Amino acid sequence: MRLKPLIAAALASLCGAALIQPAAQADGPPSPAPGTHLMLDAASAPSLSTVQRWQQASPYSAIAVYLPVNLRVDNRHDKVQANLTADWVQAVRAGGWQVLPIYVGLQAPHKCDSGTFHYLSNDATKAAQQGRAAAVDAVGAAQSLGITAGAPIVYDMEAYASGCSKAMRAFYSAWTTKLHALGRQSGIYGSRNSTITDVAALPGHGQAAPDAVWVATASGQAQTASLPPLPDGTWPGKRLNQFNLGVTRSYGGASVNIDESAVDDAVWDTTAPTIGLPAQANATTRSSYLFDWTGSDTGGSGVARYEIRTKEAAFGRSLGHWSKPIKLGHSQRRVRLSSGEQWCAQVRATDHAGNRSHWSRRTCTARFADDRALHAAGHWRRAHNGSAYQHTTTVARHKGLTLSTGTARFRSIGVLLHGTGTVDVLIGHRKVGTLSGSGLLWLHLSSTHHGVLRLRTVSHAKVAVDGLALLGV
Image (cartoon, rainbow, N blue to C red; front, side, top):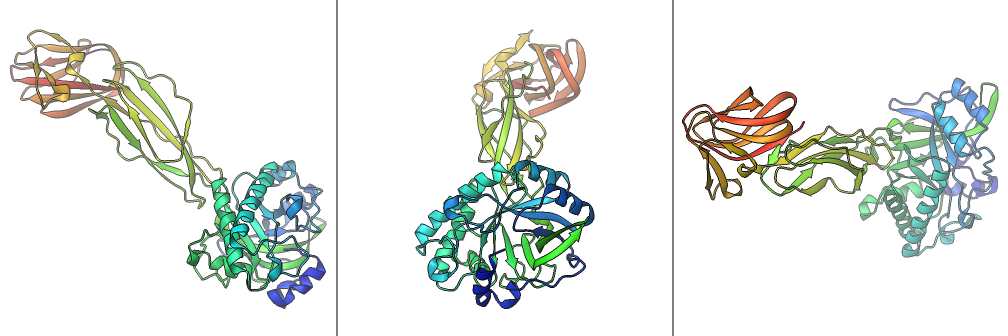
């Protein structure tokens, strides 16, 4: 990033001269490689009018900004933010640019850094504590600017000498872990010879790695595919390359001194998660029912939480209104169902970038009411049967006998039926279907009906009804 000239000169031997020297002025930046786009950053956020002119005329589609930082760890130096406000961020986004937040806090331990910084501890345990504290401060600063979703928060760690890698890895890992706990993505920026070398080593040490890595190369090449020391293929879609430092560009009559980066398109997670609903049982004989689902997030930040809302109805009754959503950190919900009760649910997911899915399709199940919930007309016989639902069944061997509900609301009818006979299904006195066979049999109607449901035998063959389930959808 942008250090005072004396600091930059002192670090030249650590970063390589090419990294420190400003890029030569040109008519404009090179075209970004496929799958990437151009981003600029400046020591201080330009005025909104300048940004808006650049949005109309320049090739950039993102801007990085420096967050307000706790004064005890403030290493922004010359980064005076007279323009950076929540309204500025909102207006820049409305103009079509993404906004990437940068946090410049404590720098490498004094043992490895001769700059005039506030320093990290060289003790790994203390450095991890400082990483967590930095994450909390950064999230608060980002939220104060309305930067609540869509981008990682990037820690700016300037170049440092060897000898502090253990503490630095502990800091980076804690920074990422805490950001994830706070529902944000993590990013780290720095020099190839120090910061990025230690970041690349995090997975090999079993430590939490950032979601995105921003490498300062000053290479003049607007690409992210080859960024040593990052092994090729690592951090796919989550790479940034600061390929030009200290160039002055002019667009729309406004000139700004900037750094330029190529950014993978997928760095910005603007894609909502998706919900997968496996085939659910339409009815159950159990009093305890496990409703589960899956969530996935192709945007890369990962599912952070789920919400579920429900409707319930007693046997044959109308479903009420959706309940108030309940937040869950897991993808299942166990419910207790009384006899004949119908239960429906919808689920939605929110990722760590704050993107939220639509409610899933409604899925419902019902617990069977046993045969004793039905009114028997004619020569039906109630019998005990150890293998039947609730150990009871209602048996008929005559034609034209009916079992009926009270007035009910339903669209699907599930019957636990046994024997060799057949039953007609009637709503009131109108036949709507026929069920025959043995086991759980379903009749799905084209629309919801409200009335008395009747099961009527059509022959003298044996019919045994163990239970009935009604679904309103």
